[in-house]
Image 1 (cartoon, rainbow, N blue to C red):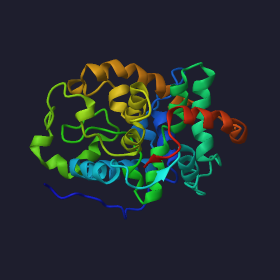
Image 2: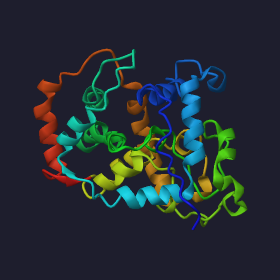
Image 3: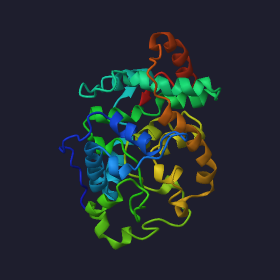
Image 4: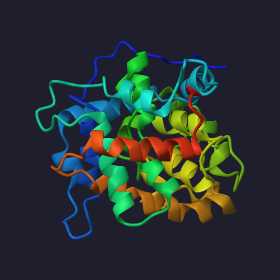
Length: 286
């Protein structure tokens, strides 16, 4: 096995994790807004973030992080305790907002609720970013957020900043740079090693408790090359094609639900505690 690259000492390029999400919104604006020339106007911090992400997210790195975290051996917490823990992820250098992480989560879930979606869908909006607690366990930003992409096969030029993949050690191995790489046609996304981050981690946390539609939303909401650009069709199975509509249904709430209006966290908490208890036990493994 080739050496695992785990450079956690690299300085964080983003002022806050919200910078990545805001830049995704710039790339995929609401339908009535003009498409942005992303490469021309991108912030230097975001470009540096993707340089690190594309350099260090190797196949071996992904496998190592799955082994490290997806066995859920860190701690036992309730969902609300995890939300409180994520709330400590505050960056005073972000001048654009002083919203808490819980407020951002509730903005998503409340938008879903207003549109009359099922209760499991509302809960998915509340919890979908809880995997970002990995930053509080010492993981660098590039191993927690960012557009996800398959490793172990050819990189799509529809992934943001594809030029940085030339810095990835896997780029030097021809067997990883064919269309299929290490995979079989129609193998299904469940068998594909996407770049590691909060999506994959939270999928493993929630997989015993939420419906399959919700798990697809959680696991693939950052896989923009698939659900927004239509790439990697040769890896999909019938289940992936069936579930795509749910990932796409969730995406507008993930991107467009932030407003300047603060949700009433105290007033809403009883509703969400009841909703959480409907699907999750009091404590779960993380």
